[in-house]
Image (cartoon, rainbow, N blue to C red; front, side, top):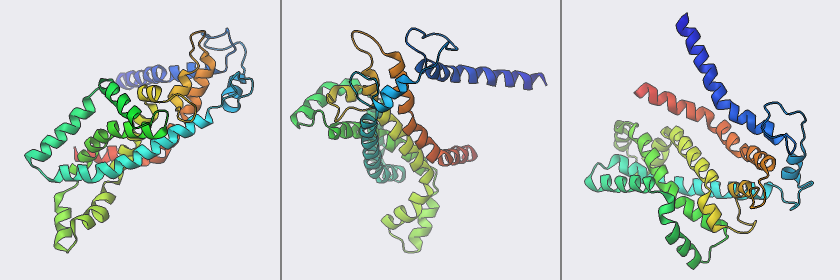
Length: 274
């Protein structure tokens, strides 16, 4: 009985610790200027939501929607392109147990551990030479560069869990390697594809450094840069910043709702195999 009570108390404390920042974010976003810091605001206002969502009362008149659209376009393009590339690549690395394949996989792993800031200068000069500055294409190319190692690393782990005997049975029945990969392996790896696509989407959606360096005008600015624009040298508009953060979470919440069942299946299948 004491163990159950202790466990319940620990869960409650963890939930409070995790959810309190989110509660503070919501409270601050509806608190008038000068009332920040109170757990329960004396007065509630939604004028900051009006400024961010509709541009009402905003000095710039800008709304969040164009920047959210830019982020979604970049994320979708990066996710699709990375999956198209990393699926056959990771499958080959999973099935070909040679020194060369091991070296290639190690190379992807090293690229994943490489800090993005380490190559910011050469990337900047390359993008400038290609005349892609302040363009969504530059963000797509840069994010593909950093997300391909993530996709290969994750998908190889999922392909490793698929028994080779399934492919051998397909080969005996006369199926070719492409047919086996497309019609048998990919359906079995659908959970892994969902998990990988989710991580790629989220990592791209939250990317700040290169989005800040490679974009200037509203035509290419993404959500993280829009949120940071409320911090100027004169003031920090906390309420507008937090409202933009709240609204900017919507695409990520939608993605998690869509792939939730695939994530659960992936976790459960991993625990069963373990």
